[in-house]
Image (cartoon, rainbow, N blue to C red; front, side, top):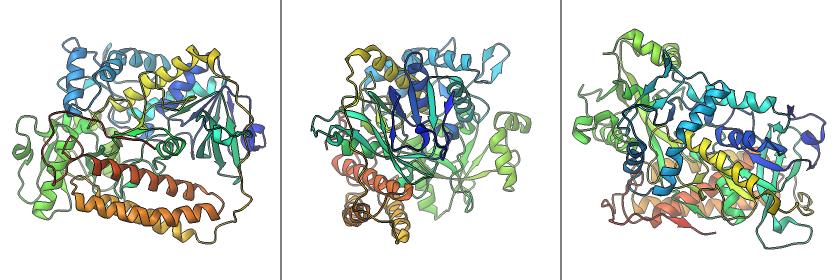
Length: 543
């Protein structure tokens, strides 16, 4: 294993030109590491991570991974559930592509040593909202951490993989950055800030895989990790790639309501195992009024809007999620992480309810990719939450997200290996130009703008939208763009500045997409266009 930690003096860790790698992978989560491990069979792979190697969304995933493994289940059932949740906006070919490869993905994870829960010799399957069968494999209620650990352990042992944390990616290197300028649009790697030295490095390679996660931190309340600032989506857009369905921002119905702990998720599986949503003022189980057939197991957009409606109608701060009617030993056994966390906050989920509110949870739109994980840009592949593959449509079905990472991470690697002999050697690339900038003396501007973006996105571009609110958000974005561009052009880059720039770009894409959709479908619900059109159509933005 060749792991270079931030601050080392090796070429990989500190020099402005980092050579010697065939492929650069941006992101060290499930999608990035899956691609890296598959590529490392014959190629030298560099994996870049902003902050720590475990700082992405993968480690935060509590629920599990959906796959048809039960005798009574079928691929067609899983496809139908995915399409229903996605409100028909899904690409059926992409849905079938992913679901048919799910059992093989689970097998590979078992081979890597992921300790999935079992009932004797068979994998224990749980059920989550929107699923017609039990098909969620899991590791207690901390599946993502177990998957991240297994993938990272395998990557560390692989001599063809270099893991490089502490790198904030700034912009994709394209033909515009060649010593001999070209407008061809080919991607040759990425410029990245070394977070410890403050120097900008060129990471150049024949192929680049974008696996940088979502844009959840555009919102004030989010279950996403601190670094989910839409970096990959914004970089790909600036480089010339199309993005699609950015208005489809998923809000998880049940985030813990706690003034000190703002982003602790209460997994869908709590409802899957019998948890009930209760109005704390009336004491009534309110899903009977919103979706009497599916109740708490309705798709996330339905449940999130129901909770939002109850909170607004009754002037509540939160609603209750109650599983205390189930056997305490069963609850502790199935949800040890959640039980321990809540106990530390003075909440016993075995004897009383959990206060919950909706929070931004998943970016269903992103960079347009095909079934080979190819983007519009030659030399750039993408996988995971930064993409729009056609799998999720207008709303992601629970536990399909990690699955997408594995399948498209493999697809990217397979395509790169297949066409390797057709990929050119990288040209000479210009160094990062810092000749006209100085160190910032106004960091407060970044903090102010960051807070402002997240507040107006939450208030104007949240669970329920109107055209007037969206136009207000668009107006504020235009004002902030000028301010941020002026700041970016004047000062040396920092992680905070890079993230602010990407956050604002992602917010603009979300708002533009939301204004373009003149209907309510899935996660996009607008009071001005409450009906759903007969023909589902993607919102595709072209740079």
